[in-house]
Structures are given as C-alpha cells and as structure tokens.
Length: 175
Image (cartoon, rainbow, N blue to C red; front, side, top):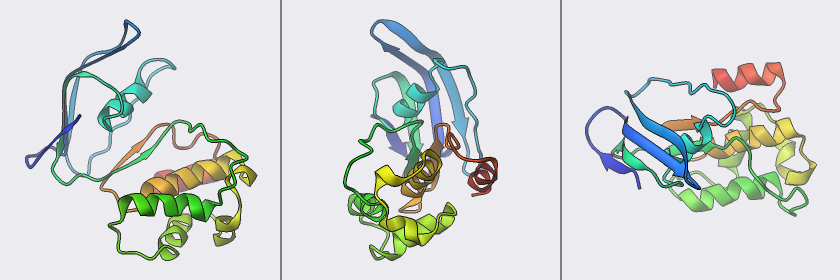
C-alpha cells in the first residue's frame, strides 16, 4: 500500500517494479511530482500505463516505493469501467454512491452531483437518466464528475477523453 508522508514532493515513486503472471510490466520506474505539476504518461497499448495508475492507488501489488504526501485525496478516472449497461441506476444515484463513500464534502446529496455535472458540461436533466441510456461520451463525462466529487487535490486520468467529442476534450483539459 502507498505510504503517506508530510514531506515534499506530493508524489515520489522509486524503483517501481510490477509483474503479472510472471510477465514484467514495469521495471525500475522512478519519478516525483511537486504540488501543481502535471505529468503525462505516454506509451503504446500494453506498455503498463494503466497498471502504473493501479499501483498508485494501491490496487495492484508492486515492488519499490510509492510515497504520497500526507492528506492527499485522489480522484481517479479509469480507462474503462466494466458496468452492466442495463443496471437500474441513475446518474444521480451513481454520483450519490461516491458521496456516501467520501462523506467529507459537507455538500448536500443534491448540490454536489449538480455541481459535478456542471463541471463536465452535462445538463442537470442527465442526472435522472439511467447509466445504460448514456452515450459513451456522456458516460465518460459522468466518470470524470465522479472523480471530481470530494474535490480531490490529485487527479489521475487514464485516457479521460476516450469517446468524447473534440469540443468536450477541450473542456476536460481546461477543467
């Protein structure tokens, strides 16, 4: 599990190594980030980008060191999420699930999802739609809204603009 510390940088990764099924995924990856910096992870499919994110959030075993600054709050948008499209869950209910998990925003159950949908340029009416009724681009924006709830101070985006139109991409990157 990643270790939290009070010292700068906000994230320090040293000699990160990962393997799955006896296959090396990452070998001796090291980097650090200061507060306010951005880092783009670029590479071909299968290069280990998603696995790096999973290690950073403590969802995949690794060797080496991952040190997050104390009190870091992470918003994560996965490359894809396997969710049954016929699940009888509305967008608002989906966002409310996140609020129930974090329980620290102090925002009402209605206001926080509304604000999150505004951040990703989705109309409030979409909150009443079921997840399965959304286009792929709308669903991706809902995932970004999910990550933004709780106002995290670190965002990890794994191909956040997949299935989003060019105008929407600009909005995501501006956000």
